[in-house]
Length: 143
Image (cartoon, rainbow, N blue to C red; front, side, top):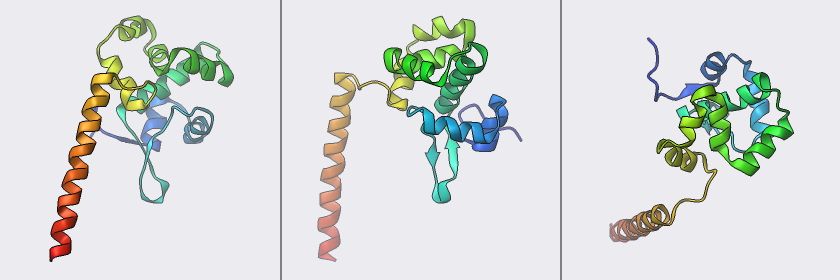
């Protein structure tokens, strides 16, 4: 049974999908701060779809376009993770850079500061959660 396109991938599944060994993915995590898979108990890695897109871009830049590790780091620093992802999309990369999904993907990988509107919504959500926690703490102390 194949996983859906939005399913998380283990390191072995990600390595197979990208055509690189698992140790290469672990090495890239040490060299590229923008590669941050989720880690579960015991350090087990799970790659989200956006992580796979970033890894695919890194692979394309290093293997197909001949960038060095420092070159990819510089590209990320100067142009952001969106350009790394676009490199993995090949000819579709230019269309991706104009796509509305870019903001959502960039926000989820932490490569850009959130927009003022998104920041306002996040602050409101945090305030709501803090309020709910205080009420729950009050209820627990009464018991």
